Image (cartoon, rainbow, N blue to C red; front, side, top):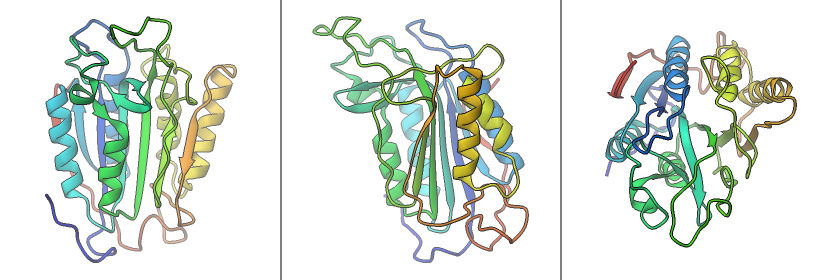
Length: 264
């Protein structure tokens, strides 16, 4: 257990946990998530986030990193969680797939993969000022199960609902899949990177621009989805003046990244 701070407006930080998994033990490798995570971490550091980054992490490494990150959250913080890699839904829950997935199946996924809703719940339980949850993990992933044929598994991820003060953004709509991209980055992350460092841009307006860019480039084949329960106006993750609310009027401190797993 880790203690929470009583005051919401003391020692404000912008904190991010960024995870990208390209290499999978079962051979279902992806070209871009490692690049996506490295580039997202660099962009977030540039705008003042203290970034913890994990690349090609196993399940126990992901668990440890998430637990440590959650314990670091204070009540005044803006918190951002980003994951790129494989994800799937099983029994109405969304799971983030770790690199050690060689024997992953429907019978053990709850023990050997990361429940996305559990991660969100752990973060929001710390009562941060704002929590932003970005998932670029709707690539096709086929989970082995003795009672399920390849064509019967639900596609993509299931809708998740945002707790008060949080915002969720998915690379694509529920039940659909996302493109890994033709260049260095996945399509959703490519457009996130283009907009996330824009000064004084409200996060919801920023994500609308991302969605517009993804829809245009994919010719309507991929439509990002977001769900927001934010209670504040003008939440800017890259605020350059006091004209808009970034989190509080306290300047967020810049910290070096702490890295887990393999680094490119």
